[in-house]
Image (cartoon, rainbow over all chains, first blue to last red; front, side, top):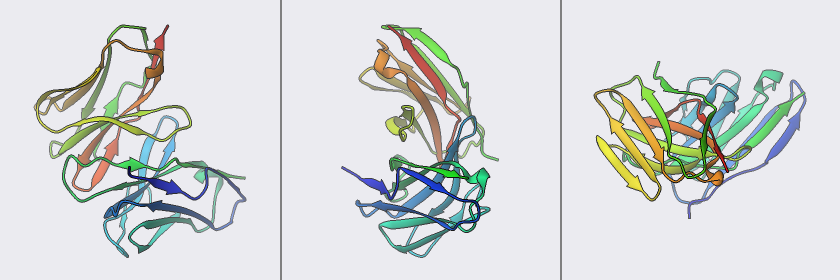
Length: 114
Length: 109
């Protein structure tokens, strides 16, 4: 079974703090994604990575950065957390580029910025 | 802008009935289509995918794709209270996935 894990289920941070969200997958998947999910807005792509040290901006990259130093690990960084970054953050991974390959999601991190 | 539209609901059906969930997409280059179920506070889990026109059945679930109309649907037969969840439609374009905002389904015992 594919497993995608995220470092925290719940996180509370203060405005201005630097926040690291970690995601690890154990199935040697090439592609990894970070989304945020907000009521009424659905899942929105922040960044994705198709290889080590490679990254692409998604629809809402502002205020975020990412790091992928190893194939299995994809980190999301909030450089200076703000209250509008309070959200559910979901990591996902997928193997290769075949059109039928599904995304596997991690359990999510619910981040609250005070 | 690649858009995926779903009725937000809520959709309520009695136990044992057929639930019909609909999704439209804007980009004709979309390659494959996925239905995810998401329980409150949990992450999405895949129900099924489809990439050819027509119907695809898996147990109580049937996905239908009409690329000419840019329309994909999910039918849930013999609905159970445990099917109560939010259903997300997703389309794949290249290496990116685009999600609808989800339809909330409640199955009434």
